Image (cartoon, rainbow, N blue to C red; front, side, top):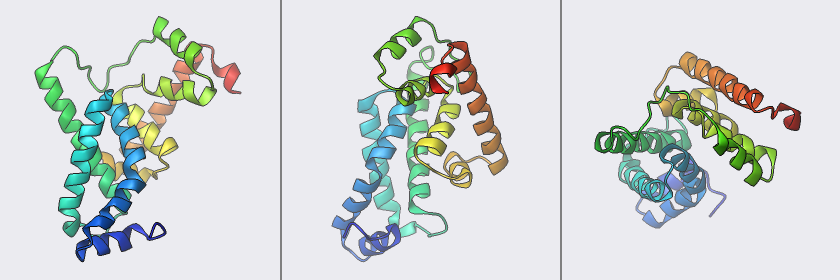
Length: 188
């Protein structure tokens, strides 16, 4: 049953085999949770939004049009649900949320990250978390989750050109962080 394609699983669920939706949950829960955890920076919120996203996907599965891959469609649900949660929190706590485009400063916290991270990849991923939200998301979706630029543009609701520019700026921002902390030697 695990070797079924997403389309076959969706068709089975739409025929009334609702338990088959668990195959999609198993297939996408880890990557979606990782994305949500990076966006929301809170595991409990990420779990709640993930459950809500799967429920929205299940309830909307009959409307799935097969124009895009299920993963792209589902990531768009996850992304939009996370943005809704962030907006809700922002209204509640105006001063705690930073804007998407604000550049974060890394100080002594960076040294603690470096000393507690066992490998270069882990350190780089923690630095990615320090990028502005949109930059971190496009980086994670492209390099970690393996989505194409076209899929990322669909998930984020931006044009392909804007997605390419955002990825380019994200790479540059990450490079600047690495250079700022003289970490490039360890990575080369």
